[in-house]
Amino acid sequence: MRKDFLVFGQPLIERDEMDEVLDSMSKAWLGTGAKVHQFEKDFARYKTIPHAAAVNSCTAALHLSCLSLGLAPGDEVITTPMTFCATVNAVIHTGARPILADIDPVTLNIALPEIEKKITSRTKALIVVHFAGRPCDMDPIVELAGSRGIAIIEDCAHAIETEYRGKKAGAIGDLGCFSFYATKNITTGEGGMVISRDEDRISRIRIMALHGLSHDAWKRFFDSGFKHYYVEEAGFKYNMMDLQAAIGIHQLKRIEEYWKRRERVWKRYMEAFSDLPIGLPAPVGQDTRHAYHLFTVRIDSARTGISRDAFLDAMTGEKIGVGVHYVSLPEHPYYQRAFSWRAEDYPHAHAFGRETVSLPVSPKLTDRDVEDVISAVRSVLVKKYVR
Ligand SMILES: *Cc1c(COP(=O)(O)O)cnc(C)c1O
Image (spheres, rainbow, N blue to C red):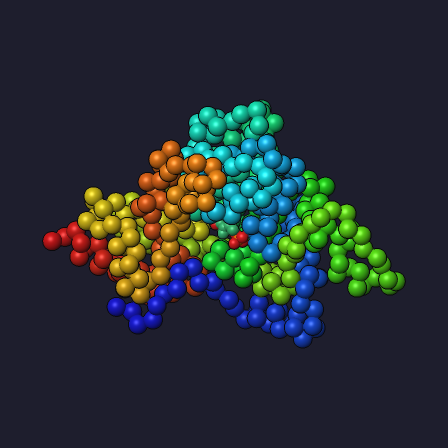
């Protein structure tokens, strides 16, 4: 067994971002400034979209995106039960009501027929999540939403590199939201981005991310004369810092290199586990690009002889950090109380959430680490099912 614990989803932080952070520190400009502006420009170019606004998390990006659509009490927003809680909390904080539509059991993305069933006259928006980095089947979703006047937000927290039929994730719907949390494909520690083709929407989001102030606060310091600022709306404190953008600028430059590394790890796992009685991710869809954010295996105790939770413990015992993405949203007490959601009503998300385990795929993994993960999985399972 390996000696040190393999931390799940640890980012790869390199010399360039360390130097850039030091540069901010030695200039004593820590807050929102030129580096945030640069990171927004670089990210917009990467996504080939005209407008991007950096914020301090994807949660903030989702919340501001919901507000920019004018969501309010009485409105409904359809989304998936197989996501992080932030996706629905962003809706709840506008006063609108989240409505869940179950996933497709193969792609693990929100299922079109389930969306159709949940549309009412109150449906204002749809939040799709490109789960694990695999794009949702956007053409029919865009067509359905368009025909009913429903806006689309893409939660791209897993999907920075994702493409669907030549289109980039986040640039297909009305707004795309990204996360640079420590475990995501590229990181700023904490951080997020909203992209859109709609300039007005992005400028409103920019204003709402900084208290609702009329000017970018940092620009005031460069102006020759003193400038008053005015509060245009009751906004939030959601701005990204230069210290964060300093990391992001250099992480973004390495995004392809990291993607290739994760693809190699992914393929190695697919091959190494092909003879085991566990569920593996579906093959990558035609004419799409997968972002390989999560590698999820399914542990069905009837086939493996070990429960999912016992498997999680056994892997940790083998010094391999693992994750669960996710226990389905209706299993959480708050949502049960607030919306009377029942897990059984979303059977595919429920079953997946009870059986899934995420294995490490970060670019920080060495070949040795990858082989350690494989040996640990094999030894935990072989001990259980080969008697
Ligand atoms: C990580 C994540 C978020 C939240 O991102 P933060 O940057 O941590 O706020 C939202 N949605 C999904 C699907 C995520 O995985």
